[in-house]
Image 1 (cartoon, rainbow, N blue to C red):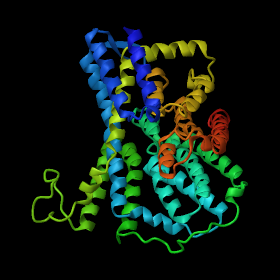
Image 2 (image 1 turned 120 degrees about the horizontal axis):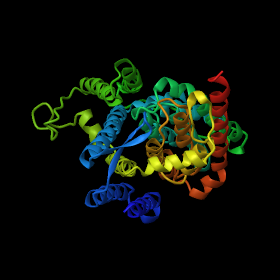
Image 3 (image 1 turned 135 degrees about the horizontal axis):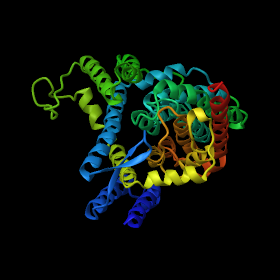
Image 4 (image 1 turned 45 degrees about the vertical axis):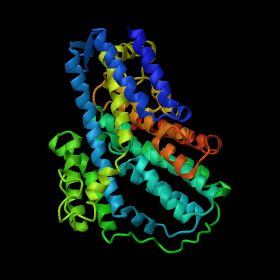
Length: 455
């Protein structure tokens, strides 16, 4: 039966990675794979286990209990993402992101390169790399008319956005998974990964700034600065970003799961959104009945309707599918064999760490296949304690490795769609820059881990 389980997982995984060829949204094979795996486990009455990370052993469990356990862990991530997505959509409802264009005053391509890179790096750490890429490419299209030049800028934005998302617990889905899964804490993650992520962004920028594509000034018809459609745009931008940044502090102070803080932040942002829009909203009255809501929608209602539910369902499917392998003990046994056969790096104070080479391969692999299941699998495989450097290296590698292919990250895929970037153009022009940044940041991570933090 275990062979059938592996076959189903591999086939589902291939269907996810080939969604563009099959023209089937990846949420479909993810959900089907999840349901089929758990159905096989139930029908075959296979033994399921819970991994005891303290004792590094498997403990027998019942299928109802283990499924409920994994559903609860998955729901924490999904509810957190729903809250963050809604806040971002509320900001967009008030056209708050138009405020960012006010910071762009230079015509120099080289200065614009660094300005967009820094904005992508900072924004992605707050509103996630996918949303930051959408916002900045939208602004880029208003600032630069020449498409060939925009493609170069878009490529560097992808690298910077993925680098920015890697060091923040709220900047990338995989990093959020590690944070919510109690593999890393926000302060230590930032301490270990911030500088390598900066290096990952700076190296490609330094090399690319010497290219002819970034020499001279831009020619643009849009000399005026766009003003947000709403007078509350700037206020909602800063309020929304501040509310999201507040979540890690809330978790640190209360020790409650991050989704609780995100719901509080959403409530505060939604309250101001309702006040500023002068409309009322009731969850039980979504159709707008009543004298107060006729003729227009609440900003909260409008924002909730724009949430990208396919992504939420994809995460549900893939995380519970990987949980099926974990519950059968497959990931645990694979990790044991890996630890036995692969030379370990690190010091005795940190215990046995996964080889840097293995984590680097995971990073390169995230450029080919989705990094969410890769990180989900690693979380079930390895029994190292919270804030062990291996988790920080996984966060860095999985977060930045996807930049090496245009289809290797959510930021790359959305940029590909918005600017119609050719896969092979990106492979030829941008991929090697992303690889230089990835390796450079990894080397800096190893130096900081071995010689600075252990000094």
